[in-house]
Length: 428
Image 1 (tube, rainbow, N blue to C red):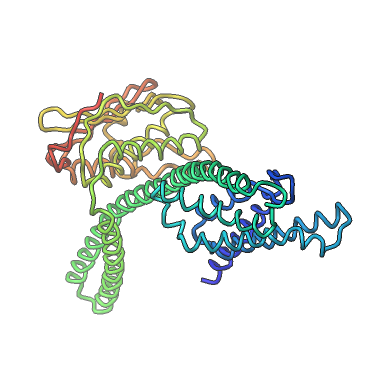
Image 2 (cartoon, one colour):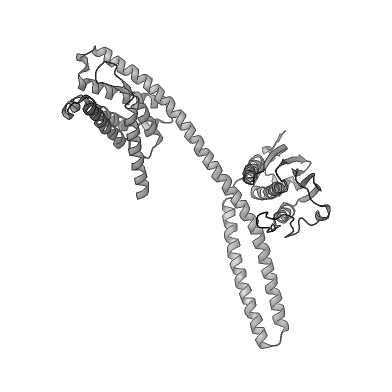
């Protein structure tokens, strides 16, 4: 809370200083010390953009700083006294005081979604305080008062038009930046959840292995007659049981996290964007120039987006690893009868014919880290096959020609993925 307040105060001071600096860009319409500056435009834009800063404090601070800067320049440049500077420039403080009062009373910030009301309120805030400053300076002694008022109102009109346009332009770009940041966070969250689902698969497998080990330990316990050995075996079985309980708790926690983020549906188009966007960055980080293509797809809405992202991500990562420097990765998808067909094609190094029947086996891999020589874990394709065939009731196969290309083919029942027939469309 204290840090947030401190940051807001820092913004307030920065806005005030920058506005004061911009206030040195001015012209004198009546040939006197009355100035019309660009500061008001900047001040409006900044106050309406940074809604966390206090407008009353900010505007009045600008007034004080503007008075001090102009007075200091007068004293040092014209060898005047500070009293003379005060008599010349004190009216500027009244301008900003009344400006802040009108800004707060009219609640200008509340009109951001109403362009006409925003325009009129800013025009009032600009014109009336300037008229008050003119009255304090007694400008009618130097020029026709009606002409002075007309000039102030018209200049205020043009400044307000420019201010309003700039406010909406800056608001558009700021919102665009926020949307991009939110989208990036959303993509990262979805990819993280799909990765968790991958890890969940192997945790469940490990849990089953633990249960099998515990069962075999108990069988050995039943066969042994030696009491000391039975005690030792029983102790091991208890330890295994405790490990199983820990695994169960971890699995339950991950499942709960995934369920909490699985309450909505996603279009296949969005799934493809996430997979391609994520893996394009991966390819660039590896120094590879890869052309990602989508030949054709049948758009649909599904709640199985975690599963599809995990499968496609594993297949595309495998394709990236198969390409040495440059190449093509193509994702094809279409509906035929009651089945959805997908394929991930790459122009990589291909797979040896003798390895085609082994690549889906847990732990099998022909890839290794060129830096440390450590083999790949060999679990990505195993997991992809499990998700397609066990979770989505489909089929995953592979075709490859060594040194030419590899193509992973997927077939899934449409009913397993598509939730609403009316929400589908064909894209060429």
